[in-house]
Length: 144
Image (cartoon, rainbow, N blue to C red; front, side, top):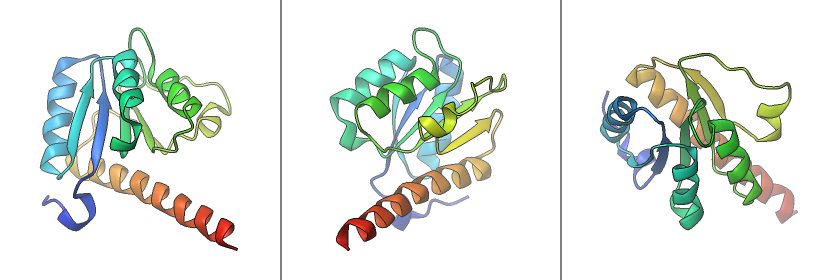
């Protein structure tokens, strides 16, 4: 699969996972798709990266189960900063989330591992499109 350079140019993904092999494989996959990748080795590290420069991150891709701070807790922390960055939760163990949590923290997608490159490209594109759509809808409402 070739990158869509017009769409993905200058898009940066914050990738959070506590497994080094997953970070390496996902980083290679995302870079092959044309994205820049910044990695956090757990939710707390990823939140620190995001908090330092939230405008530099176009999407957060995070493992759900991690030590120190889960992917859901990372998402909650990001939302408390007032950010509308798309967040994709990913796991190989299944999701055990309380009812309403996903909508309350505005998760763009939930994905099960393993995920192939084609599916990853679709997930990322869909999440980025949803942010663009939300911004366009918000602008249309505020512009009158």
